[in-house]
Image (cartoon, rainbow, N blue to C red; front, top):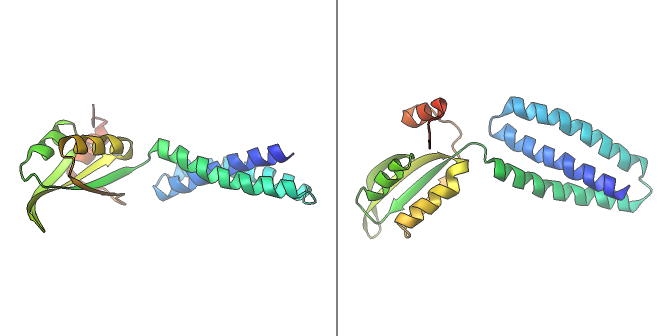
Length: 173
């Protein structure tokens, strides 16, 4: 019984975590489908625990399964890499070498001259699918190991060549 409760709760919370992240990223309809499976699993698991409240190991299994499900759900979402990431890069190299190389690899790069504490800089803003995030970081660091990189998730994306490329399925092909 302990193993069953533990397993059911891992599955339930994994679904819960993935569903919550899908909702936050705007995948409402897919999240709704996941929630239908999630609630059935939840009711079965909770029913097993409530039917056997006299045994503390069932409550412990429920709690450990819940925590494990959060970790597993987060790992699954990380692999799914839903959505996009905006990366700001500041390079000490004032030439257009880094933005040009990134554009050649298919990234949409907006760049401009900037000034930092120690003089001129090249600033860039790059939008990419999260699936390409680590590859982008690696490319930047290969070209400019001292580049300053900061990333965040945009809430809304509208306009520009990049959006057209995504809709046509041509990005990074």
